[in-house]
Image (cartoon, rainbow, N blue to C red; front, side, top):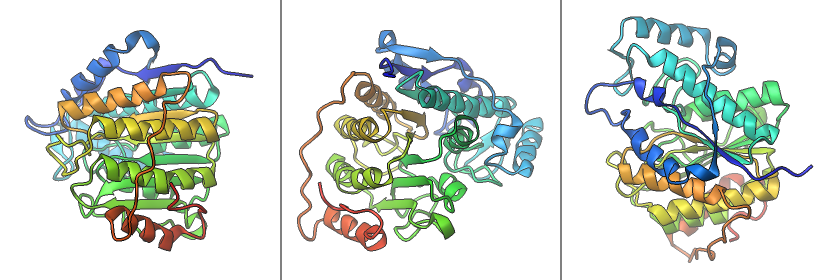
Length: 352
């Protein structure tokens, strides 16, 4: 049965109630730029209400001791969990709301109530590991959503694309032994958190189901587009997931104060167009985005707009011409290293 094309958003003013000290980059005001992009497209979007994730849902990814440590920290809030990560009195409630909102969006897409959507949640999640918070993250929203799809919706093959400028160590470690969940990351390297080298490719039965593309500082639209065309596309076509989940950080934007990449509005639009086309081709258009990082107003507004604009039309936007990868170029070197690690698993790597 065909599904009416519909794009939804999870958005709630309560996500502003998780607070770090004044001047911290992961601040409530980040959502103003995201909400501006959503508001300008509001008539075309469906709205979903978030809810708090329960213990059982969180404990599919995190250890009980971690949940208890967050609860204890909130009771003495405001306090600091590590050099980057803080909690305020409302942080546990809001982190549960971020995880629960992510679950609700993923379920709506998996069930066909939506063809695509964006969970505009905070705090972000992809650094949070089973046993600890880190990197501004308390609970791993996208991992919790993926686990819910497994447990409640019968979805087995999932691909998580993480284009945040930082490597999603927590998401990778949650699934690195799982052959049916593929984690694909582009990130600045070496950079926080120091993980995500090419040779981190999964372990045990999950060997090959982790694909890292670490990038040097200064990469622009063309480099990202080339990586998506020549590495992401053949990986997705070979893996053929049932749903695509995207950890959508917008901190690779050229204006971001935290990182050193040079992606612009056109770059994010091109990336989102490729992802939309892949979702249309391999998994019935099922595509869900989850807000991660992004600390400039322009990056958050443009990145959110790019994701929504690629998702909204009934047909996928036109794709860009292939980016050339001449011998000796950065793209040529990146593709060659990924082929060295993954070439026998994913045919077509390097082809545009």
